[in-house]
Image (cartoon, rainbow, N blue to C red; front, side):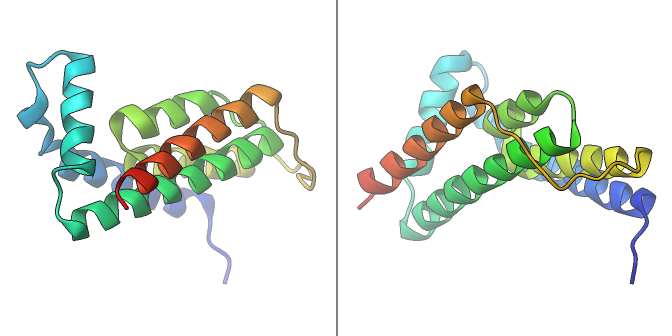
Length: 146
């Protein structure tokens, strides 16, 4: 069964919108703190003040986000998707559950707009460094929660 780009784009965009709404319902608890203080408080709550199930989900999502970022860099470079770093930064600052479906929508639109053969891929050194940093953060969080 072949799926057309347009319905997939709609599915990805609806998913991103729902993820944005459902995750950001919880953000007001951190507003008014300033960007850095709010992030410190958020991650402290997510990593250290959570019960074991919350810690499990946090670590699970951090590692999933890392793999999503690896794939976004490789697939984005291979297809020539623009603004890959906006998706990566969006995954960190907004939510990976928002950024990844947005990337998938952009990917589908890119695939639909061209007939090129996209069999190879390239990754830049800065991409690899960014991925190593994201991996280190996830691994450090997992180790700290042991």
